[in-house]
Length: 292
Image 1 (tube, rainbow, N blue to C red):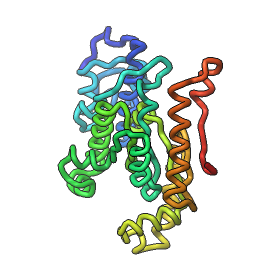
Image 2 (cartoon, rainbow, N blue to C red; image 1 turned 60 degrees about the horizontal axis):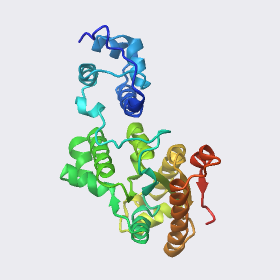
Image 3 (cartoon, rainbow, N blue to C red; image 1 turned 90 degrees about the vertical axis):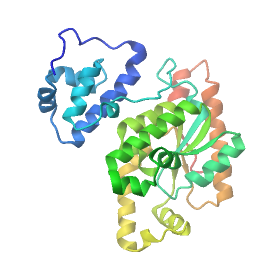
Image 4 (tube, rainbow, N blue to C red; image 1 turned 90 degrees about the horizontal axis):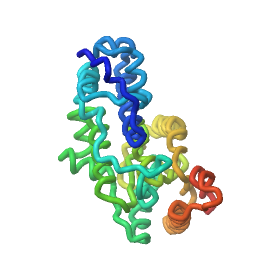
């Protein structure tokens, strides 16, 4: 599909976040399908340079261009166009970002249990993103994977996040452990929420999942533990992008909740009342509460 000669327009400043999001999704899908940029550009009848600009968020592609990219990657154009984004304030931080607290980390870290307690204490709605995914899909997460595959699950995951952000300016959100696997979705989470990585040792992750009644991870305990350690190691760099880290290892539920509540209060206070003397430093500083 030919692209008009004058379609390479510079992005307007207020749209840069949206274009970066689209670009990240195009880049991720192209890599996932093992298609080179040159090949995709040829299939879309556009220039490789322009496609590179799209992937970097430096170009404002038309609907027709996005449609041609989606069809070349066997996708629906909607898959490349995020929906339900909130307006961003100066500096790239989403409006009301601080009042949405998202808990990230592997299953068994305490996201659901501590998230409900935190939401009650802060008098905020509690949202479990997995339940929202199931509601939108009309079936369980396992059925989504079994019937439609991982790509469909990731699309439902993004739709659920967009909807939660659109409906809740204030909330505590428990996220699925694998939300970091989709770069555009994880970037959207980081942009719209104050994020806290709930850490725990591999042994505690395993024990807590088993205590919830799921004995499947113990069926091949040695192999399962090795797999769990690999997953933790592989995702650590992504989880570390959170605004703060809280280690629940060796803590009771009451101790973990008290520490997390103190951390959340500090994060909300700092974000809503930035220091006028050094705003950049306070906005970029990470906080760790391993010994809170």
